[in-house]
Image 1: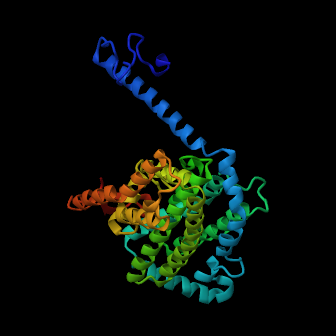
Image 2: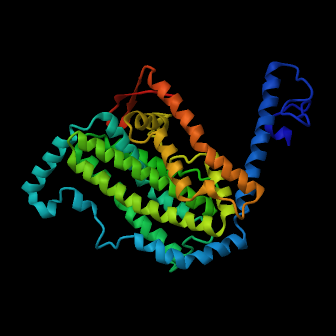
Amino acid sequence: MLARFGCPSSCKPASSRNYCSKAPADAMSTRRCRSAVNSRSMVAGRREEEEEWRRYLTPERFEVLAHLEPWAEAHMLPLLKPADEAWQPSDLLPDAAALGADGFHQACLDLRARAEGVPDAQLVCLVGNMVTEEALPTYQSMSNRFEATRDATGADGTAWARWIRGWSAEENRHGDVLSRYMSLSGRLDMRQVERTVHRLIASGMAMHAPASSYHGFVYVAFQERATSISHGNMARQVGAHGDASLARICGAIAADEKRHEAAYTRVVAKLFELDPDATVRAMAYMMRRRITMPAALMEDGRDTDLFAHYAAAAQQAGVYTTSDYRGILEHLIRQWRVEELAAGLSSEGRRARDYVSGLPEKIRRMEEKAHDRVRKEPTPVTFSWIFNSPVNVVLP
């Protein structure tokens, strides 16, 4: 096994530590050896992780989810809006057919005039949010990997399958309306934006515990609240800068995300009620690996650290911050009464409960470090989305 990772034949890991038991002849050999041992440890760690979440792919877990299907019919599906009642992008943007040529032209001029007041930093955050929304095909395929709750045929009649399709239909409008607004605003290099979307969908997303509904529902509950907060903050900020049209768009998206958050928060609450030990362990598993944004693999072909720079811009602009992350976790801990869990918990479950309950304070300390970084000198970072204009951000 060691030879596969390039470790010299004279080296092997000691029984109790990750070092070579026999010193290599030179420093290069030492580095190769330690790299091999670290690689072996990483492989072993990945196997342990996979074994942990695969314990959820069992008949007893599937039985819990099957038992929940009538509940999902009654408590999740009503949160979706029929197509005839839901807003559509044409409701929020100039419509040439409804306004006529002259009216449409004037409406577009008015939109562009309001868009001129939106600062570059908010535009960068807007594009990041839009790119995230446009990667919907990735998220629908993610949901269809969750065993026992997926849409196996693409047209299943189960409550779970109908939820996935209805949720996707509502989410589809978000990237659509933002993309149309951006095109009309004239403020953005749409070809670069579209290339970023293309690359993100092609890259996909790394999902921890990819087949477990327990883990997946925790992840989506967190993400839906995060996107609701991000779009809501954006609505308030661009409204303050005079763009009422964009504020209305972002507010409509935030309201959708709030309903979706409610659905996933409810289903996880039900899992806590029926299977508290497995659910709190799943939550701890996800939080140990952090709830990363689904667009973490975004790139535009120019900036190799695009996501990090976008995240830094969002932090500094107050669109989505470390404080928001902590607030979401505190909210979910309260909603799911994690700190109150006692009955039915194994020793592993109690450790998971204590870990999750203690996380907000750890994140608070991260916030303090972030505040310290604000005192640093900002770094200008160019974004291809805004024609390579710079935005000053504080980098970690």
